[in-house]
Figure 1 (cartoon, rainbow, N blue to C red):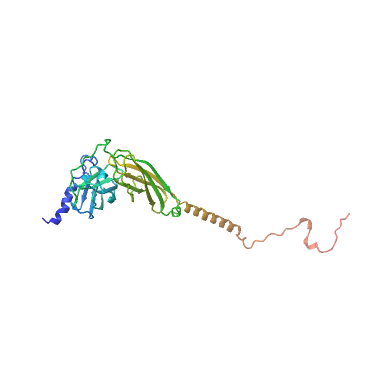
Figure 2: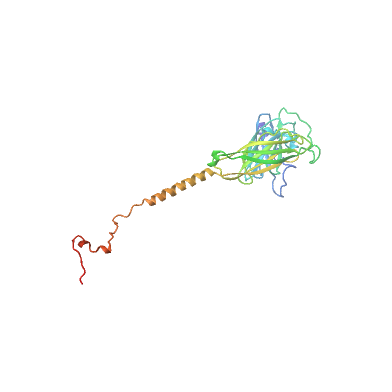
Length: 314
C-alpha cells in the first residue's frame, strides 16, 4: 500500500469514532456528528483541514488541545482557535493552524458549537510535543474548578455619519466576566457572532481574555461593525469558555438610517411647495374676456352725448 495514501485514510477512520461523552444524545437510528481531519500527524505551524458532517447548523469553534481536550479551554491553544459556520445541511469545512497547546499531548482537534452542547475531538499527533498522562476533569462545584460568569453586557456608540444614511454602523461591546471559582481560568476562549435573527453567523474577532484569577472580574472591549445596508435590529451572541461550563451572553443592537428619512422629508416638502406655486401661476383659458358692466341708471349709452334735456309732460 502506498504510505502517502494511508495517512488520509487513517485520519478518516479516527474521525468516525471521536464524538464521545461530550457529544449530544443521538436519536435511535440516527448517525452521530463527525469530525474529519486531513492528516493524523502534523508539526507546529502546519495547517490542518477540518471537515464537519451532521452537525447542528450554527457557528463552531475549532482549536488544538493537549491532554485530550478533557478540561476544555484550559487544555487548548485558544490564541489560534478559528470559527466557521455549519450550514443547514450539517456540513462545514475550514482549516486551523497547529499550535502547541499549554499542556502536553495526547493532542486533539476540538470542535465546540457556539451556544450549544455539541462538542467533540479527533486525535492529532503533534511532532515535538511531549506525552503526559491525561489529567482528569475536576467535578463541577469542587475546589479545583474555575467558574466563569458574565455579569454585565453593554453596547455603546451609534453616532457615526455613515450609519445615519444606511452605511456601516460602528458599535463597541463591553462584556464583564467574573471568575466565581477557586481556580484560575487560563486564557479562556471567547467566541462572538453578529447578525440578524436569534442565531447570527457573522464572525467578530474576539480579544484574548488572559488568565482570570479566582474572584477577579474583567471587562472585555469588542469593537463591532454592522455591515451596510443597516436598518433594524441585530443580535450579538457570544460565550466565554470556562473549565466548568461556558458563560454565555446575548444582546440586541438597533440602527436606523434617520438621515435618509430626513432627506426624504425635505424632498417631499420641496415638491409640495413647488406644486403649490405652479398651481397659482396657471394662465387663464384663451378667448375668454371679462363682460362689460352696464349701469342701469345711465340710460341708453347712445343718447348720453346728445346734449338734450329730458322733461316731464304734465
